[in-house]
Length: 225
Image (cartoon, rainbow, N blue to C red):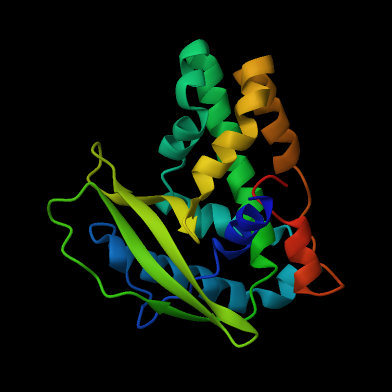
């Protein structure tokens, strides 16, 4: 299970849009949204590559500015808490959501250090007019290993009517479900404030490029890092 979770984390940002342009992101269409956001994000990564090599923490800025506006992190955070959110106060929940967002930014930024121009193929779009949650299928093509099937869960925000990604499923394993299981014992014993503190500490970690190859990096990088 841990290996699969790490693989999910390492792949969660390795999707590059095809035929996307610099136009405003179409958040009314979940399929176009995923493709366009990925293109904009990786275009910026390419433009600022030298600066990023000198200061890897710039990747946090890219994630925060280009990716996070399209991540339904509030929904994801509360989903991770599950029933334990009932035991937390309103202020504790707000603090957890903020900490969870910063934690995702750091985790995703570290994943960017693994990006190496992998080929990405998107599954054809389907009718989503009557859907509240859709799965945007992506195949990661790597010459050194078999293709990996990913499913990005994208949910329609009922308050804004915009589509936002909130989960990733790889090899049948949900990233959020895995994180929920990981935190279950800590939540049961120490409650939401303790987990919030833990996420804050992890979100402050510097982004680093591994020197011994991406495989070593993958072993050290996970959503639980």
